Image (cartoon, rainbow, N blue to C red; front, side, top):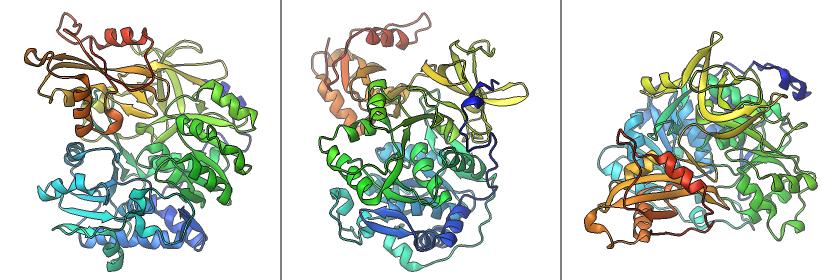
Length: 563
């Protein structure tokens, strides 16, 4: 392990971190006792205090235990946009000694069913605009208990901010066996039994598609989650007096840790936005003196491209941070010119957020940063597993307290992503990168086959499996295409069945995809070909197709093409 990066270490921080050895819910209890009347959440000008948050999380936990039969270690699905109910529900599940399984709100019915079956989950917390996707699973008894929340229940103060229609929509009084409304859960006022889950019990199980494109549950304990919960806050020396803006999706580990768990540990007030709106974000920064927020680069770019940006007082901003995709150097420089540093970091679902972050006083542009507290990260030859010196490109690996236990019920996949080196267990990221002489890490390419569309990870194998369900598709290969706004987008190269050739348009394929998969997975480009290149073993040579695409100059606007 190189120690070169210690020269650039944040001056206020020690090299090691001793994170609390407690259940994550304990952070909610501590902050409620410390700051009972302070707003933890501000939701379109409606405050939710730390004490109210703690109380409602306990009521949710009591209902889960007493009415839904949730027991210690059970997995409970959570399907919502950023909202008070998402956060209260998350901590209610933890208080019931259960395991949170957060899902992407873009998922459709069959995708939700796949996660439910894999996790062995029969209880779900869902927002009302997403409930129609869940209703068939309740009718089929794949789910037995569903709690439905209306976002508008928490709009209790008049606001001048623009509230999205799906947030302001009145509560729908759904009725069905096994269904209960959020308001009735709180009104029941059930209280949970003892908090017995310890630091090494499972806490949260976010899903990633890993190396094969099939969803895998990443098993994180209270201890692994607690490490990055505390680490990112201490890295940036956040104080309880700072107000933060929460815009990154909380089902994803970046928003989960930087916009929810971390601020709760410190005692920060969070201004919560369920959907990105640059005008509302600027109003909130000015109104609540927001000091910092974590977001993907496309959000930051959009924020400062607002033609009205100069009319807002943004002087409270201390720092912006994020990851998921590299911040373009030109944009980072424009921010620097107005005195704002965008600090990039790097982590994965398997590491429950950051393993590398740039030091705020010594950042490098388009750089992953340096290994944070207690992380040993190296670059190895992916074939020989030999450690490589600075400057050479190889696979990034990491050992640290935040690394997950493994993939849920997938021991073979788990074994493939761990190696032992110098007596330590390292996680293989699948990302190709290099380390410079100062100990900073830079990503170069992806060893795994993955498309990064505005920070969303898109796995070609998963999309291909859906494409083959279309009656006209004989063969399909999914690759990444260049996109000026998203960085990368999805392209489908398709061989049609003989009887369909000349009888279906590319746009029809795209429309079908929109009906059957989450929007960020839908191909923006479709190309029909007579045949796909294959190896001697009959495998589609996707890499060859990807290389051909990379050599082209692709239009940035969504379109369908035929050839």
